Image (cartoon, rainbow, N blue to C red; front, side):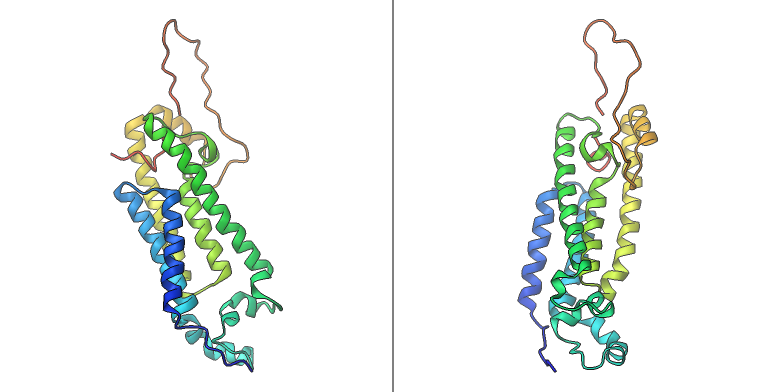
Length: 237
């Protein structure tokens, strides 16, 4: 039986947490108080995750009785045993190549790609004081929040822990509340154009096809200001 103790690696906790947090910061560019609240909640989730992954295995300790009786001979404090889904579902071989771990990587990478794509649209919209309705925003109103949620969900598939399982639904609820408040701010600033956008583009469940702003009015002579469609996540009152 392998008696390796794979925890107490606090430098790994710090390094991995900083890598993910800095990486997310580079994609999300928080500026307002709400941006920082969103980013701060995500950072707390990441620190809790890597604390359990490399520092102190609280979930393993709390589940040790059940795991020992269900999987006799298992070294609970090996790194492989920390992949609880890998153990519970009876996967064999390298835990980093099982289907759930591969799915987690897809979700994490997809979340970061969504954050990056959303930021590019937001930056252009912010500089022109307009609404963001292109790119990811043509499918869903809050792609940046969805990006953070996908990353957290991916890590839950990869390394479930009691602390992060508790934090996840709370953070989703916080993000939903922040999104609603931002929408109210944007409605006050843009009124009808944003109401039209909200009527056709869901808040969190993406459309199957991109929404495009249509105009049925004949263009008036002379210069015309067409309401481009900024998204609520970057327009602040």
